[in-house]
Amino acid sequence: MKSDPGRKRAHTIVTSTICISWGRVYILEQSVTVCASCQLLARLEARRCLKDIEPRLFPEDRGPDQGAVVELFGLEGTGKTELLYHLLCRCVLPEAAGGLEVDVVFVDTDYSLDMLHLVSILDSKLTLLAGADEAALRSCLSRLLFVHCYSSSQLLLTLHFLETTLSSRPALALILIDSISAFYWVDRCEGGASYTKQEEKLSRCVELLGRLLRDYRITVFATCHAIRRPGVPSSSSDSERSYLCRSWQRLVTHRLLCSRQEPGNNMAAEGGHDQEQRRQQIFTVHCTTFSSRVKVSWSSSFCVTEAGVEFLSASEENKCAARQ
Image (cartoon, rainbow, N blue to C red):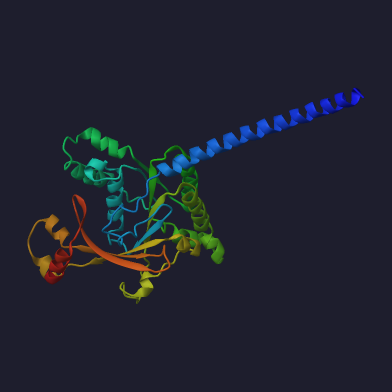
């Protein structure tokens, strides 16, 4: 009779030990998992939303949210890269100078990044801030990481590299790509007659970019060059049609259609400084959002000066239009 309670007691102890052991392991694993989740949530919460990146470009409360992709589409010379410079400066500038004070990655696939021009724009905006010096400019540039890519394969490797950068830099909130269509014709040539092969490289880049958007909730701005079609006017809707792979088109939440208003002959004949003549060249941006069920459109105009992009008020737009 004593052996039975002993056997039961031993069995109970063993069972209890196993239960306690499993309980401790489970709690330990759970606590570690929660801790890792908290760290991930902390990184995501720390990444700033950029809906207010430039209210004059987007309709009210329709700016790019976290995970949004904005495509700047237009012919060459329509101000797309200048807009990227403007948005870049807006992000890296300190809050005291009207900036957002976040980190930015600039992916240059066209090899068109003009660093001297960019520094000049930053310097002109910092002069408005009392006490700004060279240290303030260096601080702004420290928030900028730029990468050159010469092929779709290198762009894919760059996006893989950015995954590590994003996980270690929670202040990184914006990726600028100039341009996403840089290797379109090269990829088409290498793909041969197969349409799938032609789009394969860009599709892989878009797939990885989509995963970065979901995991890290960043915002992406990318330029896309419009294709000039023989016999088709630049104002035609055919020239405004997106031609990149469907996976990219599905990723886009906002589209900025960029165009340029040529100054009239009478303005070109007038004398004046070069800067004044540049101010007469007006660029128009037509924004369309696809992030909601209802499409919302918005238009704005700007000119380019040595200090960068300057948006025009409605009265200034009418005045410039009357001169042309």
